[in-house]
Image (cartoon, helix red, strand yellow):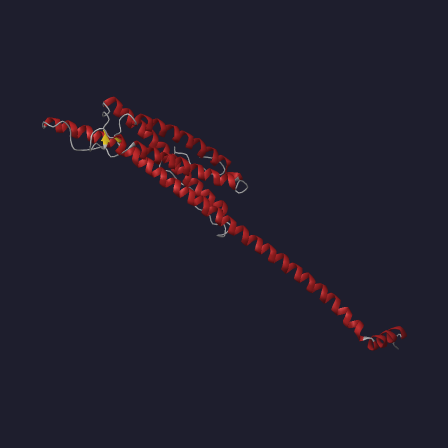
Length: 262
């Protein structure tokens, strides 16, 4: 025979079915609130991750652009450093041949001018400073790049000093353009300087090779900076992929990395 208590309970629930409904609604409502909160948090995390990826991409674009401009400027200074000793050498050789033919000099002229060379030098220095400024501006992003920044800064100072020595020495030999106001004789547009003798020409070539060497080193270090910036800023966006580090032909050459040079 059924227990009177159970019978009364069943009868009571039959008369008050809303209690059973309430018992199911409350857990369902709690579950819905939990799911909404979880979805909201996931949405916030996703938006945050997307914004971070966008910021990283913008920062990489900015520093990669500065690196490209600087490498282009360094390329100009390198080409000029290579060309000038050859220009003097060609002028000296052709003038010597012209004198054997009874002429005072050959029609060959030195095309390089000191203001143009200094402008290229200053442009390369400014482009290098622009790269370091980007790293300073986003210091929290490039906090692990202190080793690379130090080597690039020191190499930049060496390059500036070598370029200044090279340009200052050239000043006594390169032709100078004469402005309209400064012309003494009508039609005189260029003042020629004495050509370097054998010892001076050897010194010009030595200074030129030093500029070339430091320019090549700087350009290589900037390539390393671009690779490390890619790996730090873009790798998470591209599923953890890493750009390969530079492998120099000569193992004695330095490769800069976040963890140190090798």
